[in-house]
Length: 168
Image (tube, rainbow, N blue to C red):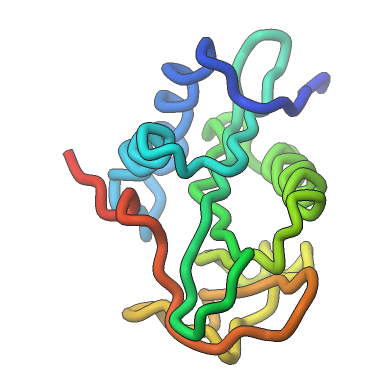
């Protein structure tokens, strides 16, 4: 496997949408709007990090990171997601590589931390833990996780950009 990770380019946009649709098509907790969320984040200038996984010209994965707000006023926090890997390429380490590269890109930006809504067993491998003092309304606390890079642990309600309400 010779998968390379690089920031998205304009030429990647259609393939990012296709891989995102495919990745979430049969996911049990998917909204079916994940590709629309990525598009809306891009259009709003809110994709802080947008990485693609490329295997010899075939886009096989994508990861988005965008700013979040926290009700206590904490700054420098971001949200990870959507994370998409082509169904036939899942469980091959591509998502892991995307997350590792995203973390390497995010820390130098002065980020205080990162939150993610996802499977604790998967994201725990990267240091994410249940966000004891952070709340994402309507989500079981064990699935909303955080990874603090610096500063104090924030406390409050987390809000993602309005792009996360994108619909068809």
